[in-house]
Image (cartoon, rainbow, N blue to C red; front, side):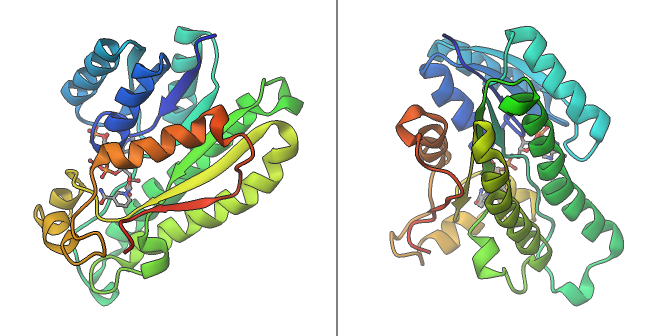
Length: 248
Ligand code: NAP
């Protein structure tokens, strides 16, 4: 039976690598994006080349109507929903908290916290066995920042990811009896475009060399852990926060 997943922020970076790997395992993938349709279309093509089916799904995770429509579109196209990879996330330029304005704080928490909660809520509504669902899996993409705090860079983002960790712990207990496993992956310094969006395109390369493994991670190395958590090989794993951070 073909399994179906919605990957928020599936168009680039860690989301794209996860989509590609799931395609190779035969999954059908809803590839969510907000801005970059061309990137989403390229991800869809990569999933199809790998052997899966895929669909670009537009929507901002911080917008409730968009989130509901994203889940509807994925379920209606593929006929079922087995998993959510709650991956969409943003940073903003590095600065101290004392210099952050309200607009920045609002956007960081809206996308990284409210967006993650809205998507997890929607998945819970559709997959919980006591609500007519068939069970499923949620993987939240948090960050090592949740335990490092990201001083002088983005304590806002770090705190938002702390909320994602705490949501993972609570939701795993809430949904375990209802057929849904919930885990989080906490990447470290991974070579994606997120660092350029925070104004430091070389951040992963520069700081990656200071980690115990001596290099930044690749998106496909994070994807391997996400895909394992989605699989039956992880059937007794729930409420886990798994670092994929090269020892950082
Ligand atoms: P990325 O390369 O910047 O890609 C971000 C993805 O999220 C894109 O597909 C983007 O879509 C989408 N997105 C952004 N805002 C969105 C919104 N409001 N609604 C829906 N989609 C949205 O990022 P990444 O490095 O792969 O990061 C993925 C996740 O890993 C994030 O949660 C991030 O916090 C976490 N993480 C990354 C690192 C790292 O070093 N890279 C480390 C720790 C944690 P568009 O293409 O349309 O913009």
